[in-house]
Amino acid sequence: MPKASDRLQASIRELLESQNTMTLATCGPDGPWAAAVFFASDAGLNLYFVSDPRTRHGCDLMATERAAAAVHPDCNAWGEIRGLQLEGAVAPLDGDAREAALKRYLVKFPQVRRLEEQPREGDETVIATRLRQATLFRLIPERIRLIDNRRRFGFKAELVLHEGAA
Image (cartoon, rainbow, N blue to C red; front, top):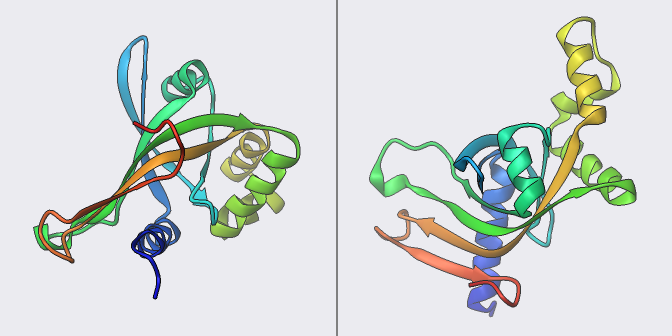
């Protein structure tokens, strides 16, 4: 029989695999900020996303190397609310780590892979060029909270992944 933490990890993994957008929350000199970004995940529950370090959230990430995020499907009723809240360390990737993460990202987003491999004229060429130059980040969650009102109203379960997570 699977342990409770194994079942929780499976529920978290299912949500990460079924969703493609997260709200990334950062904090910097100008205060808190949130940005929606596409993401891919791996078996270790790490999240990978592309961003420009010159954006407000990108500057915050480069300065603090910390972020929080929310992942959830759209819903229309209180009883359908489910999602993830997470926090952890964020770092830009380079070399082999960037290539492996980009491959994972492009598998999740075949439409982006097509743009990267065979851009048509105009905006697609601009997007492909920016993707090749963009910074790929990895968010390593230290804590993930699952919220699932489908189980019962107010259901929460928390998974602490790394020592030192508050």
